[in-house]
Length: 96
Image (tube, rainbow, N blue to C red; front, side, top):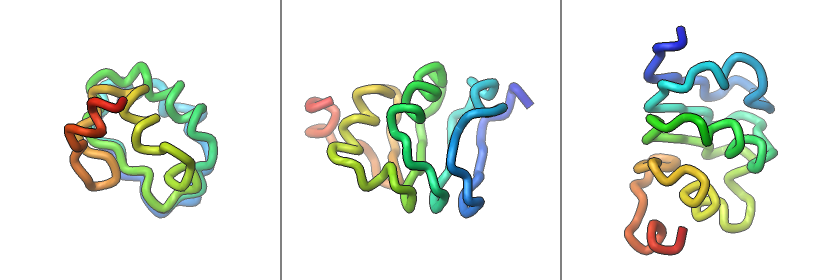
């Protein structure tokens, strides 16, 4: 399980990343779209150790509505290439 590379847990009423997720540090893709995740700071602090994570989907969660959401994610997780189905734009990368 620790070697898992892709996790699709969308549409599951998840409200926190606490638990076993921090053990999955080899994830490259994490889809948590359409859940109830509302603490962006907590999400970013957990995902900072996921150095292989390139694709993250948090769309449809309260966190995706926070101010400067995309820039905050890119600043905390510079390895992300695709966020919520959209590639990082050069302007976003420079701003982060």
